[in-house]
Image (tube, rainbow, N blue to C red; front, side):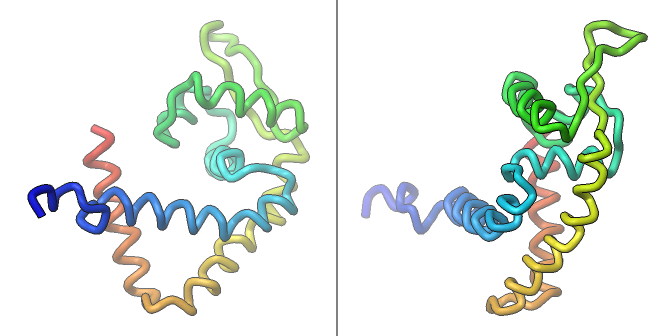
Length: 146
């Protein structure tokens, strides 16, 4: 074919996209139990690791624009998981902190990665393959985000 470069099977982006969507789908039952969406779960993981970050810092860690993350954070505040307050040092910055409810969710969420890993144990990939894949994808993300 004259346009082999346009075949879906020749694209790097499609299997990455498809794998991402399918993995996210695996998370859905767990997210439903927590009462959050997958993007909100990503924000929670960032805050469980480093509470008290600014909107910009969270957006950078998740490789999102602030105009994408702000409505997400407003919804999370409405659900009682976080607070959003203006920084006393710089009024232009909004600091995001976990509430007690947000901190408590961490206990319930701690089982989720293990559940996904158990599901992936049934795949043709070994755990070593998955660790290598994660490393390769992290290197690709690091390169592409510069």
